[in-house]
Image 1 (cartoon, rainbow, N blue to C red):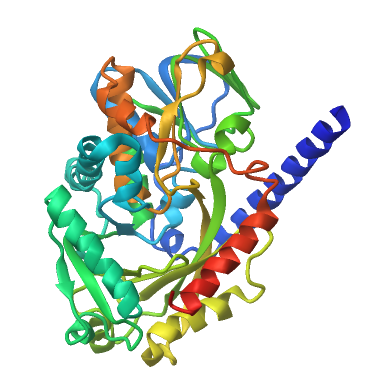
Image 2 (image 1 turned 180 degrees about the vertical axis):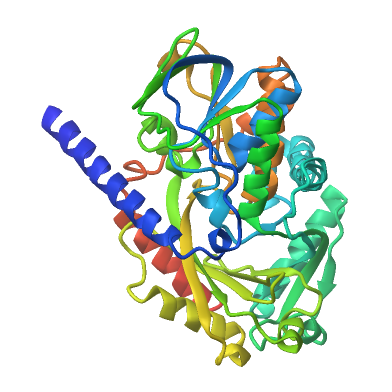
Length: 454
């Protein structure tokens, strides 16, 4: 048994290091990094320090919570292993979307319709928070309104109609249905059959937004330390976070590293799967061509399981994302693969030069619902370690409201937070690092279903 535990630990560590190395490689050619100023730089943590709330993770969830906590008078310190916005927060598709990564019926089945409506309302609150933060902290996020969910065939179109009917009847959220006769005036592509349009959702430059949140948090007195990896969490009445050059103690801790906790809590990490997703950016397109691709200027995604998502940037580039892979299964010719996916949707871009190809790791739960809660008291000896993870592709909006809900809970009112905490989640069989072959098989099955348009 001891030998098996040791083998599992070594395998976990080996896959972890491989994933982190691959992630650094994926980050090198990011269009977002090339078009966003990294200002300011935050120093690493040196020596001992203490605060009211310590946050692990300088991405959207951690920074949102830091702002909310500072507004309530908490002394807050954020520890980031790399740099602010390093992970999915600064490398995602930029699509800010209503709802969750799962069908509303998943939430209804677990907490009932009344609380499912509260969860839905919280996701919409997340949309409002983005506009509030951009105005408050003068963040030029390149916001543009509008989101299209598109279907590739009639069967998938009927699925969209059923979703629209449910959202209108049970959530008072009407969406515009776009049928086959008019889809061409919304997306200049032969691939799509029909769509739903949401004017309230939209898209932005995620790294500019994330770095803007960091500047905003710092202006409120939040201490931010980059290049400060947490190597150990020592639980207790005042948990301690150990780093290579210092120690931070706090009354409460928030783990907001998502797919990047890097071995800090195996119990927590095994509840999400790190999934790589990829993007490309073309050269700036001629104005007439750029305007013709998506005339409304909306962000677009299809409703396949392994989906494509795309939008036109402020500087008239096609930003096209899609594909999913688990550790070790990335396409050998990533640029070629992504270009072929783009041309399947927009063959008129055959002559457009590809200038950036990048990707990142998102954390996906088994049911694609977000996973918020507290570490078990048995593991921490006190219910003072909170976590936010499992945004499953909907993090731009959900992280904002997640930071607000966890702040309410830390301040003594956990009523809204605990609705999310009641959502049931299970560890991936064998843990996130040991079940990759089964997940690859499952993903291959869903790709086959998408190809057959089931």
